[in-house]
Image (cartoon, rainbow, N blue to C red; front, side, top):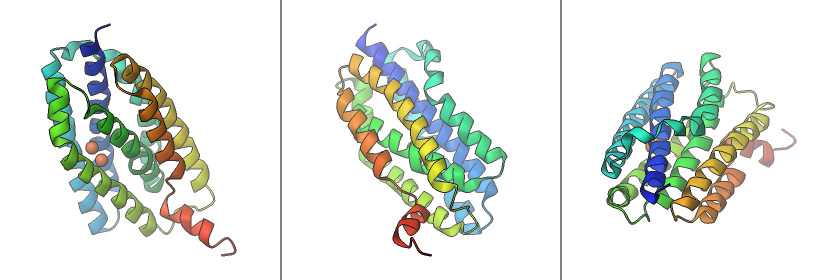
Length: 214
Ligand SMILES: [Fe+2]
Ligand SMILES: [Fe+2]
């Protein structure tokens, strides 16, 4: 398989992840019961649509748009889990999934792909700083929303987060294989993802750690 085809597959994973983020953020906005949260999540959804469009444009530059259907499976388990949480009205759990895990995965992938020497990689590199700044904003928004959702069950949260982390790591393993074949550093990507997912805790998990007797 050519390196360009591998890059196209990575771009499709990125595009699908951004499209997932756009869909989920919009549905989160519909579940939010306070105005500031709904507005901020709508804004995130619009930014994610922009990111998906950029990934799509980069994919077009590879000339291999049509060969990417096999990549659907990379994000499908995460999508299914987040959709389950949205359908049951569990906004907080979906925040762990999207703003906690998917965002970290996308950030690590975007950083790796920004180094790729290909016209598509150049576009991503040029836009990387702007997009990554927005992605960090989404991580902070997720943390702020979780803090505001006082009714979220504290006991179930660490387990839910672990489940999402496991799904995130599964997706990262599949992405790392493509990175290896595309001559990007799969080990660096994997360490990046693992580090981010291991050390990220939601604000309410942090409170549990800081106030064990509460
Ligand atoms: Fe994004
Ligand atoms: Fe994002």
